[in-house]
Image (cartoon, rainbow, N blue to C red; front, side):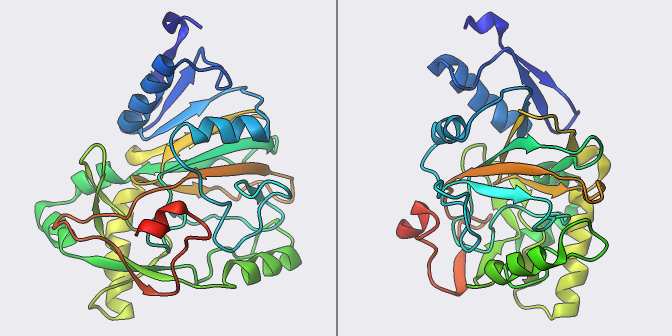
Length: 303
């Protein structure tokens, strides 16, 4: 496909672009390099009507690097150990989070592909955590640079309350989710390994701040989180069948809006293995509790 047909159309002033004129099953090295550069700039890219198979999604994600397993604890799609089913009947992640930050080496990138989408609702929101960091007053920014937060999967991440999800399936999902638990300390301000941008690396799995009480931790994290979710920092994707969304997990948070009742919503997620986060002072994230997650991500073997 000639490069002239390829276009990246900015969607928001601070985050997000739609890529048109490409077939993700047939990308030249030149176009793939442009997509990679666009991802660094825009943080999240949306592709309409790709109609990919599981194998196609795996192949596209794999061009960015080694893949992780589907999840450290939650079962994968049958026969596809690197694909996580995202099913609204089993649970709804309607909390702001960055994928799998409770391990020492969270994913680098995430791809989400729509299979079944409701006729309304069920959008995915993605926030630019670097813009949030830049929005902080100087005093708060300097404070954030010094902090470390403990991230864990052992909290009420997916809840059936007031949701169209099946309570029994949610309970089963929850049991699997915490069948093994981790606690990992990450810098509150992470330096992006490619762009060098600083960003607020927190989200739902960040449950406490090192050196602070639970009450103090919650107050501090809530202050920073409010900057992440400012409307001007948030991109919204309204799903259609066959879409794919690619986002940089090192510098974003996302939220699946639970506003579609008991209608079906099914996506497949594939993630690319990431590195160990590094803070402003050059220190790397460290495990507080739990074994390494090398069964999930190859990056953990070298962490």
